[in-house]
Image 1 (cartoon, rainbow, N blue to C red):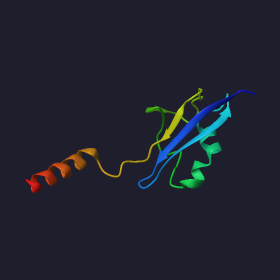
Image 2 (image 1 turned 180 degrees about the vertical axis):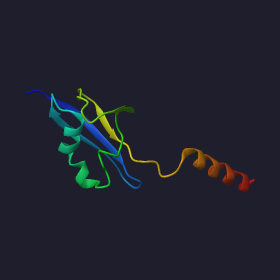
Image 3 (image 1 turned 135 degrees about the vertical axis):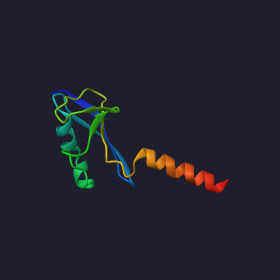
Length: 96
């Protein structure tokens, strides 16, 4: 049986990991994530909640994989991007 070489990437607030692995040719996203054991390393990942993508394009857990894919597991934002911009701008004004 032919195999595919892929990567799985996840970043918590203090650590980032990119795992390389080979999976069967007919493997889907969920099967690859489970095979990588990344869920044991990061128990906060919930596949029913966290968004998943391949090279920044959102996909479902049943999406079939292709050679060289990089599965990305996204975590929820800790702060609204607009609020973060406001806070940075406010900090710069205080330094002037």
